Image 1 (tube, rainbow, N blue to C red):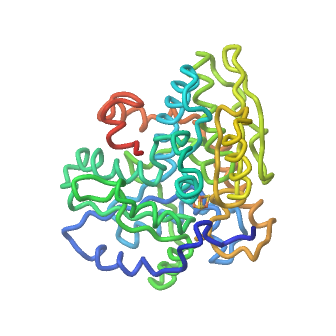
Image 2: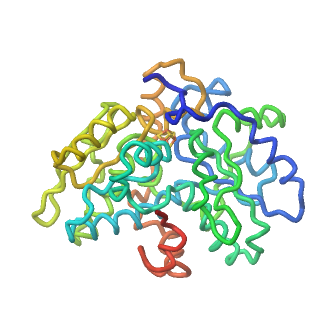
Length: 373
Ligand code: SF4
């Protein structure tokens, strides 16, 4: 399968950013934005910068200039996802129930299972995706911290993905008449928004994400590529299960563009069989094995786009060039390796969110806001 094609086949180019301009001018609204991990290593391509170059600081500066009241990072929400999903995995693995646990970050994959393998939806993690976890936190935890009315908060997402528009509109993604995420635009739409506003992106002074939803670890950043969710989850699960420090955090077996990658990790003497697949053709192979009772896996990551979100249908057109996808992937791992903190459970802002609001992973409130079914 080539690039820049929505795996659901249902969604095409839109101009959803036209809905953002009037909201940014509306003084009664508190408009915040989150940016997905894969956007920062591809956005530059729309401005003649080489694929894979991380332009986070310029991108954040541009969003502040556009007038967003808070500029936050989906990578932070990815760290929250790991807290919930690693807990869920350890619980299911210990009980031997509903295995393999399958990741839930990719809405095109979730949609695929619901339609093609409805009897197997129980394997999918109940965690919302990072986009939706961010939205749920931005409408509950954030307003409490900032003293604003949740009804005035508007959540905008910048995603590499057209299927994320569909995910944000699913009826279970919100509460009390409020959606977790109000408007989703793609990397390409964002680049058009910047060009139309006349912002000279590359000459802006660097800026940092806002907090409390802006600080992230290396683990959160690798969600943007195939294998990243699994690697991030293993970094945390290893330390929680063994009680030991994981010195070398790189899980190289799950990296790269191969369609299905496998490895086995031993935790406290127990083998955990792992698979990481990208593209729905490869997902089907894994699902058919499960259906036939032949699967040996305990934990599976699936992303619908070949290579993961770096190759999403909302990214700059890469003309089916695998080299561009590889460069974006290298960019993602470079973001990870340059972070001081590379494990989700060590993110100080994540710890604070649990202390102040969510109590602990998989708590009642966490289930209410950060999980779905
Ligand atoms: Fe969207 Fe990422 Fe899934 Fe592609 S792999 S459909 S970009 S979430």
